Amino acid sequence: MGSWIAVERHPHGRLELVEGDIVDQHVDAVVNAANSSLLGGGGVDGAIHTAAGPALLDACRALPADGHGRRCPTGEVRVTPGFGLAARWVIHAVGPVYEERYRARAETLLQQTYRSAFAAAAELGARSIALPAISAGAYRFPVHAAARIATAEARSVLDRPGSLEVVRFVLF
Ligand code: APR
Image (cartoon, rainbow, N blue to C red; front, side, top):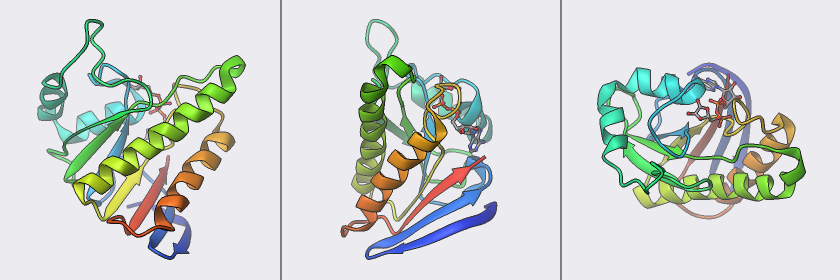
């Protein structure tokens, strides 16, 4: 799983921070930091595709795309099986590319991305979910602001009744 950084107890579950690799998480659903094509990339996306195996790319390719090859708009998610991963599902989430002059828009979109991921997990009935720091790598979202948004959304999920009992942020 990795090494513990912190655990926070909430009325309806646990918020966990661990240092580790997203592909090593034994949870119901892992979240991928994907791009709109859903056809893979580097960082989290590359690691997840490598660990899940080629069936994941086939499943992504089978999802409907628009005329520009976009399978998932920014702020939204798409779900596939986890294939070779320990996780049953992959929730592919597309966070915003950060640009300082559109900071407010990027913050809203990142919040939406987390909300979409947690909503998908609830729809699946997932009890545990592991997430990377969406947008905080190649998409250059400042890490402190990204962490504030991510943890606020997670806390609001764990403060209400729902299927999720564990929300784990995996920091690389
Ligand atoms: N496990 C956990 N966290 C990881 C891992 C891993 N195996 N690999 C990278 N990270 C961390 C990065 O250090 C960063 O903090 O995840 C965070 C998100 O980084 P990216 O994977 O670059 O994701 P993002 O910023 O959302 O950019 C998405 O990158 O590879 C492409 O296809 C992807 O185009 C999309 C873009």
